[in-house]
Image (cartoon, rainbow, N blue to C red):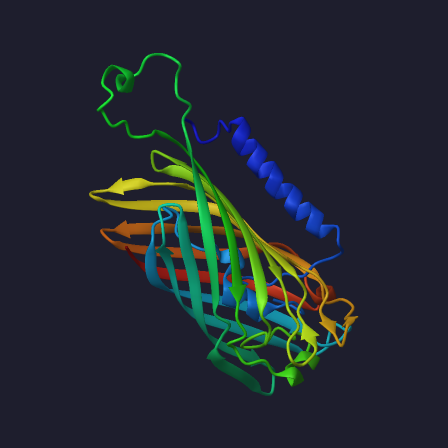
Amino acid sequence: MNLYKMNDFRSFSLLLFAILISQYATAGPCTLNLLHFDDCDFCGCATTGGNFGYGTLGNSNFVGLRYSYQQFESKDGIFDNSPTSKEHFNTYQLWMKIPVTPKVHITGTMPFQDLNRVYDDRIESLNGIGDISFIGWYTINFKKKETTENTEEEVNPNLVIMPEYTGHSLRFGLGVKLPTGAFEEVLTDRVNPGFQVGTGSTDAVFSLGYSYSRKMEGVSITGSYFLKGENKNDYRFGNQISYNAKVFKGFLLGTNVIAPFVGVSGDFFQNIVQYRDELPDTNGYMHLGTVGAEFNLNRLVIGVDVGLPLAQHLFDGDVKIKQRFLFYLNYTL
């Protein structure tokens, strides 16, 4: 089947995902953060990896290490010469995808955050264990329809016929992000209150994924909704939608495979709430164009993903993402 000849089911899946995004966006302007960003829950994005995706192109089970770098620029004031800062978000993650049953698996991330904010006259640094997250997934792999003609199974009832699959699958995820990272209330008064190691809150995660693969080519789409909780400082980052979509094609290099991909990813954020009041101009959105590749070498998977902004509006325009870089090294199980 040609990748670009989408059938009715794939069209319905993409339409459903688009409706999910549009329904959330109508709640008001949003703010992005990736993985996660702006007045939004930057650290929450980087910690959970929502718009970085939750696995590899091949959907294999693994344990591995993932590094992400994100650069932002914040302006503290309304004038052209208002002071600015450059923010560098370095996140080192231990992540995994562990099978439980043939249809159920668990993904988990444990991040370490190393954040730096550079001013003209000083540098601020923050580091420590971030917010750990776990998601349980249920996968449906769609089989091809059986014909009404007589099959070999009817001729020989003792013959075991393996099911033939279409290459399409749906994944449903339900998870939690734990308040294992430190949250400092004094930092919320800055232009980017997301400059935090953790959010200090317990959040629920609802995810939906679709993938199609055939003959080393395919498409993968994941969307997640983060229902944010309130921390002990009566502070709640805005609820968030993250999405990640990729189209890829694999090529044989001897006995190994390299799979280049292109895609888009992004986040939408609702307003931050403090002491039960919404803070204005703390919602927004961000969309990135991504390009990268995965290299499969026996049981090792090496991946690189570079993202550049396509459109954004963070903190009423006072915060801008400049670039994002992602690298991971996994051992498949």
